Image 1 (cartoon, one colour):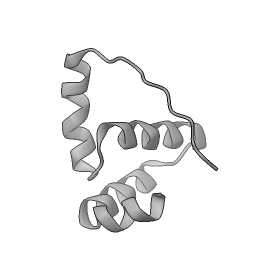
Image 2 (cartoon, one colour):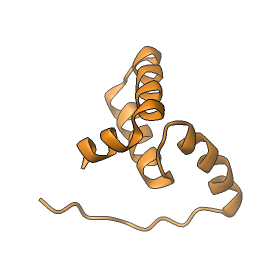
Image 3 (cartoon, rainbow, N blue to C red):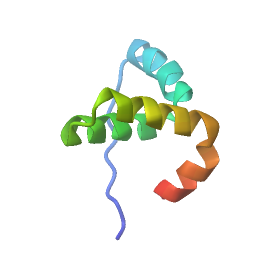
Image 4 (spheres, rainbow, N blue to C red):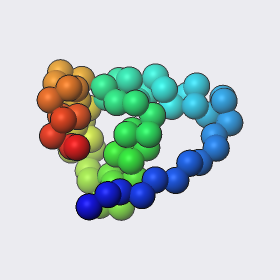
Amino acid sequence: MVAQTTNIPFPNDVLAQLEPRAKQFGMDVPTYLLFLARVETRGHDREFVRAAKFAFSKFPETLRKLSQ
């Protein structure tokens, strides 16, 4: 299945705030936004988010490949 994508314009100041947060998780901004959306819609608790942050910071390439 091919995922459809949508381009969403963001003000530069918003992207400047998102980029460091995304990097903390070992993600680029689009992946980080998708992650946040999934966390929000699925209602994951703080422990899950902390665990995901740890895993992405320690093993970013492995997890990125698995998510593809």
